[in-house]
Length: 416
Image (cartoon, rainbow, N blue to C red; front, side, top):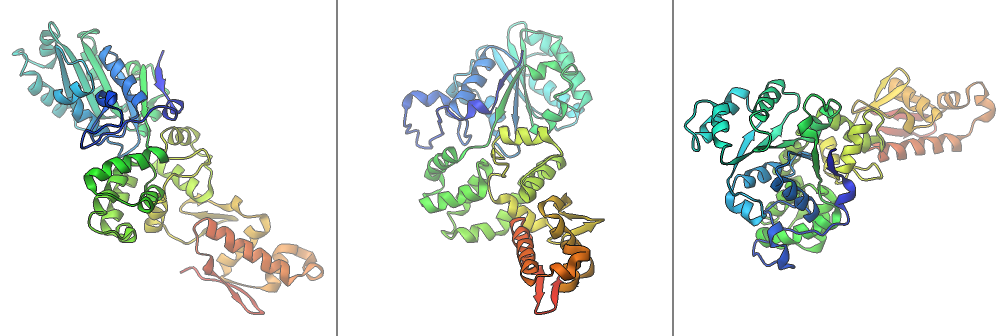
């Protein structure tokens, strides 16, 4: 049965962070330190326990969560010693699984040649596992890579006891393959999620990281959290740039920040991007419930369906088209259907206003009251409806000023 550390394990556990001066609040936690990687004690303890037991492990994370740094530290004997990882008679082989299979095999062969003179990876492993255990760490692992899966399965048959696998997939790759556990069951035995930080964790980590990058004020800490959420790479970016200027807005508007956020955004899958945009624009996502669930589990989205951090608004403002599209009787923005965010009367008025660019008050009246327009006509009711339209557009991140009032005549829509 799979061991899964889910979201419930992320919230009531003790936090330990790397301290550049090695001045720990609790010295007994020294063995749980990983430089630059904000991992909770409970998650790290479970990982080390399973690692020392020789279990296969899958570490699931979202983009830019220091997964690659963790994999490199597993290859370093001194770092493993800090973490109380048993390295006696054990080799750690870290592989970038995004490379093509031929290159992966060549790299394995070259590394294993330091321990065996046999020909080929399989023969070398048979020789080495007579006296040592081997742990393969596959960073950037993709479960859809059939050739790599087949190769790993062949390695698995060499020794069930002496060869261990650690898979480090991005969440989108993992969850899109999770339904077919029969295809590659060993990757679904011990699943550990590596979430982004919560607010308290992030603020504490900023304090610790500030020892390296320079002290920041409480106000700036809050601003960093508001923008970055719990994404470590974004937080570190702001801390680095804060050494150059104390003006947070300068950092926020810098080209480096734009590039950093864009790079972060581009690491999400198209399906994840769609869900994140839906949540940002409409506060709900009906298209991919599983994606929404793991985005919550990994602390990118809160229980209120809001994306944690204003970085997403930065993405939409930088990339998005502020124009609302009309398709039939439906309204779209950023390819997201926003029709149901308006009442039927608001929909009719907005659709016609966008299509015709201008409506008189009489035309708005007919859209609202139909054949009873003359009897029901009310300037107050019309003005209130347009006011609600503007407010809802603002809440969605749209430019409410695109609807202009033409005194005593009606309303005009400006698409630019």
